[in-house]
Amino acid sequence: MDVLIRKLQTERLSLWEAQKGALDAAAAADRTHLDGQDETAYNERNTRIDEIDARVKELVESQARAKEAEDAFSALIAAPRTAPPAGADDAESQLRKFFRGESGRSFEVRAAPDERPPFRRSAAEVRVLSGLSAGAGLNTIPTSFYNQLIAHLIEVSGVMMTGPTVLNTNSGEALQIPKTTSHSTAALIAEAGTIGASDPVFGQVTLNAYKYGLLLQLSNELVTDTGVDLTGYVSMQAGRAIGNALGAHLITGTNSGQPGGVVTGATLGVTGGTAVVGAFTADNLIDLMYSVIAPYRNSPSCSWLVKDSTLANIRKLKDSTGQYLWQPSMQIGAPDTVLGKPIVTDPFVAAVALSAKSVLFGDFSQYFVRMVNGLRFERSDDFAFNTDLITYRCLLRADGDLVDTTGAIKYFQGNAA
Image (cartoon, rainbow, N blue to C red; front, side):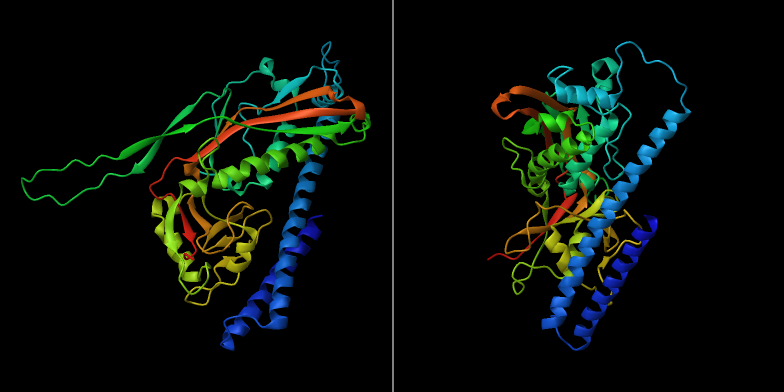
């Protein structure tokens, strides 16, 4: 599998070199756009690059699952054969018993106190504010099931991949977070002059616990078939559904009856020119990057966040020295970069258009995501009795908001209509 991944990586780099060749040839001919066949070929290569990205991701995930299975078998083979305590079951058996209705009608999926969800590492580590014990439900579900749910959730939410500060709490009361709205300023003082006061201005962010949920129905045949990967199926369906619902609000939520989106809290960095119909230039992105001050710009969680279609436009841009702003990653699993900073895509960021806020840049550790610890599952055998389906309900309580509105995250906005 490693050979295949390396082969795909080589093909990806080769495609990018071909892309650069086409763009450089157009520039040498003093053409601002690719013509006919060149444009078609460019778009086909761009699509292939995206296909390779998706394929490599699948292979890496498959490799990780195989490694987990191998480690598990190794541990079982090496472990002494001791009888389990009376009434004890392994985590997978407990999960299947729940699906079959043999172990109660609900459970909560929780992370272990020392576990970190698989978000990109940042200076602001995930903060676990709960103190769970085995008796509180820690042993009712395998840790890997929790990780799979979170993994699928972040697949559809780019914000969760940028290194936000994640707060896990074990209850849903309003959580008050200090919010910086402006910094202190100093001034030149004459000898014996009066020193003026300049205090920073603080506000307050209230992180609530908005509820997201879905119903998921499985046939009795699927539940009782031991050959079916129930954890994978349920985690994919639930994680993606909850991720789509929450992910949209983490980008553009109004903060009124729903989370406050990162775009909603961000500040204007650069406005596009009048002759480009909402699009950006290389200079616009450079200006946007340096509109964010150095402490935020140097943060490990400093990233670009755009829509997939916007990334295709960024791949064509060069700086004043002729260097492409976008650079493909040379390492499997590492993000590509723009001007040396990681770029992440999110389907809920606006596309390039007039007045659209289509590019975000800044320190995403200043965006806080609050989750009430645990995805709750409940089952009903009666809801769809006439179709012999078992109905499961998945619930998540979460919120989000930008806690530093002094310019930690800024956006590019297309010119007005």
